[in-house]
Length: 278
Image (cartoon, rainbow, N blue to C red; front, side):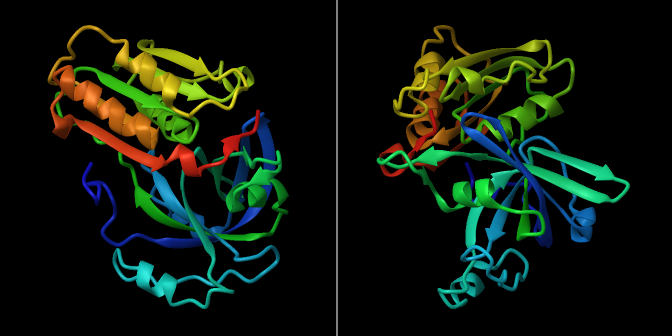
């Protein structure tokens, strides 16, 4: 995958918002809904449209944001005093609604626990404890999903960290789209039986059954069980734990899919990442 996706905006917009509500949607996911007048200008393009989420450095603190000039913001971010520097993570638009009172954006946060069984990760703790009115900001980054014209079939694979993006892609695909989707989640109760997808896309769920196995391993094993070659005019999107992303790409290349028709991204390495709630 190129360092700067083609669909990334050249002048991304930073939008301030506030938390409206937060809800546990399954054992391993917390959905946070944010809103505010600035989100009315968020140019949602569907699919896996993602953004950089900024939350205050500590609960109850003011949200200090970096200046954004074009695509440049990182150096300004680092220049913020450490005690005031907001936490920044990448998230997908799980849903967006234009309502009579303004725009609402949902983001789905994977919940993790540490070795002692306590909730781990700053965004996970923020998502569970956030109260209405808590400040946030979103820096638009656009979609990564970018199939070339004339694509025959799509092949999607993700673990729980990539599930919100793939869910959005499936919802945005044309009703006539065909292909496959392999989706791994931590527990049986995380399986989304109401998942919206074209009838021609075969969706297969992999559950770790509540066991703390390596995220993405089951999805990769299923992806690698494919025996026939793919059409070189297909397109693949493989995201999640690093081994899933890189292993999935290697497998699809062996099956005959050109590298230029594979979008892959390793969001994290499992060895340094806490396990999802089981």
